[in-house]
Length: 204
Figure (spheres, rainbow, N blue to C red):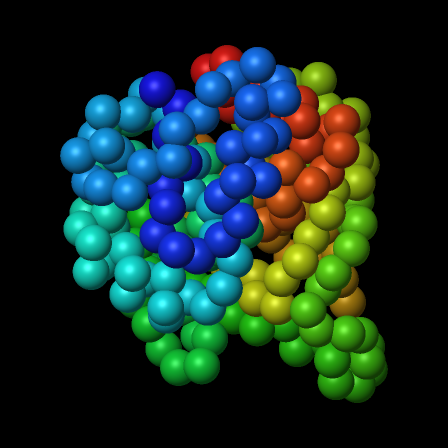
């Protein structure tokens, strides 16, 4: 079963519809038991880090997601679903994340001199591959993906970094190691390249 975690933090239907258009039925799951029965798991999300962690902990989904990952089954995080993998997030305070990856999630500082860029980073941006992960199969180098985010992750172990992009400086656009993969961009909104990424994950 291809399962999408519902913890009341995101546009689940757009992710579900993207998989269904590719011919992969995807179930929206809301309980730890459903997570444990999944073959492949997607953790999407849009919103605040602290609220998301609170919702996952309250429902028991945090533990279920970590157990799923530890079992070696394919996992895909999208946007906030990537950020939550870190040890800490600093959105309106300091919060403990899922702790799957050592490091933190911090706000862009490019809205001050010398960059004076808008935050959130919103729009299309080219990604640069840093490591070869299954998501990149058939994806041309420097492909453009769609981003909407004010925060970005900083893994301590840079071997986790699968792709970067630039917004007033380099930031992590995707991570990947073993069964754990996640993107800061939204593949479900990234046209043909994003569709290929979702297909690559569904076919693992």
